[in-house]
Each structure stands twice: as C-alpha cells, then as structure tokens.
Image 1: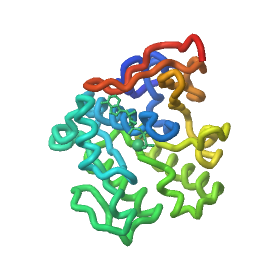
Image 2: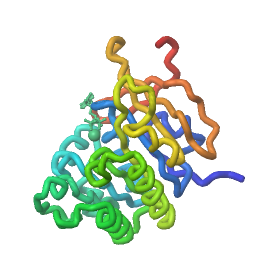
Image 3: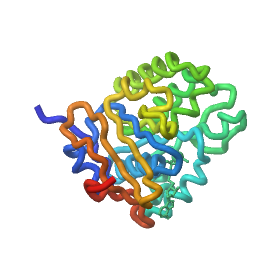
Image 4: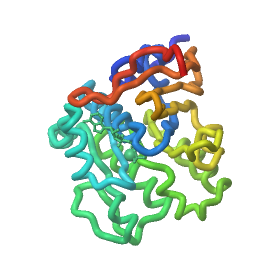
Length: 244
Ligand SMILES: Nc1ncnc2c1ncn2[C@@H]1O[C@H](COP(=O)(O)OP(=O)(O)OP(=O)(O)O)[C@@H](O)[C@H]1O
Ligand SMILES: [Mg+2]
C-alpha cells in the first residue's frame, strides 16, 4: 500500500523520506542550539501553506515578530501567508513568562498549562483548517511537567493522539544534550513519536548534518547527510557525507 505523505518542501529532504512525512504522524526534530530546528519547522509550515495545506506554528520561545523577521532572511514571507489565512503563529512565548501577548492567536497567561495549550493548538488548527503543526519547542513545557520524564512521555503520547485525531501532520522540536548519547532531552521522546530527524553541527569541519534515525512506514538511509543553511533559500540537504 502506498503511504500518503506531506512534502516538507525542504530542498533535498523529501527525496530522503520517499516523498515526505507520513500524513497524520508526529515526528521529532532534535539537535543542539543553532542547528536549524526553527528554520526547518518554519519551512515545513510555510511550504505547506504555499502547497494549499495551512499550518499552525506554536512558539514557546521566540516572539512571533522575531520569527517573521528571521524567516524573511530565508525568503519566507510569513505575514503574507498569515493574511491569506494559510498560517497561524500561536504565541505562547510571552504568556510562558506570565505576560500578555498582542498576537491574534495566543492564550491568557493564567492558562499556561498543558491542557489549555493543547486545546488552543487544536482550536487554532480548526480555525484555519490546518493540516500541519509545529511545536517550538518541547523543553519549554518542562516546567509544566516537573522535569519528570514519565510526565513528559505521557504528555507527548496525549499530544500525539490529539494531533492524529485531528489529521494533523506534526513536527515537535526538541533539544539534544550535547555528548549525552540519546536523541532527546529526556531520552523518552524518540520512542513515542513516529519519526526522528537529528540536526548536528560538525564545528571543526565547519559543516552541518541531518540524519533520519527513525521514520515509520519509510525506507530511509541512516547515514548523516550534509546540510547547509543558505540566505534566501533556507535549509538545503546536499547528500551523504563521505568522511566524518
Ligand atoms: N543568513 C544566514 N545564512 C546562513 N546561516 C544562517 C543565517 N542566519 C542564521 N543562520 C544560521 O541558522 C542558525 C539559527 O537557526 P535556528 O534558529 O533554526 O536554530 P535552532 O536550532 O532553532 O536554535 P535554538 O536551539 O537556539 O532555538 C544560526 O545559528 C546560524 O548558524
Ligand atoms: Mg529555535
């Protein structure tokens, strides 16, 4: 049976995924700081919007205004797709700090808890007829989950379930502690998602890499592929790295 897939539209990535991320699934994109997680997540939503699949970007860290500016650098006209109703940035960056946000899509600071957050995410998705969701990023939810890996695991299972019920294809961004072996912050996230993409920096070689370490329903390579972040273009996946 052929698998229906959501194209990321990221140069060189869909080819590695037999066409894209299996529809309705939730995947983890993880990496250290500055590895391109936000750019990848934004491209997934923006390219989806251009392909007629609206998307919601839940930001828990950077302010929407900063994201709009940063993404313009990579050729993404975020305000345009927002005006067209094809993309919504759900702002939880300020409310997480107890401050009100002036953004159209947000929630009250006193509602910063997992239930309200997931509810707002699903409501915003319904509001614009979204097919895609990105959460930037999971570690910002840790305070709500007492930094407890069991609670993190259960919360992700629940979020997955709701996203899948609403036929959303989703990317959860996570952080990987450097040198710690595993793929995620708590070491449990990778087991409860349908796919894992790891972004790395090879500082000494001045290179970046992207690896698909898990993708259900997909025949993919495990080898790290060379990747670039290019002004005006965003992420460009180039091919297998011969020497690491
Ligand atoms: N114009 C540019 N050209 C090339 N690379 C750029 C450009 N602007 C930013 N970058 C690279 O992109 C990185 C930022 O990417 P991004 O914000 O997606 O990372 P991140 O993984 O989300 O980081 P964090 O963990 O801090 O959220 C910068 O650290 C820089 O290396
Ligand atoms: Mg980021």
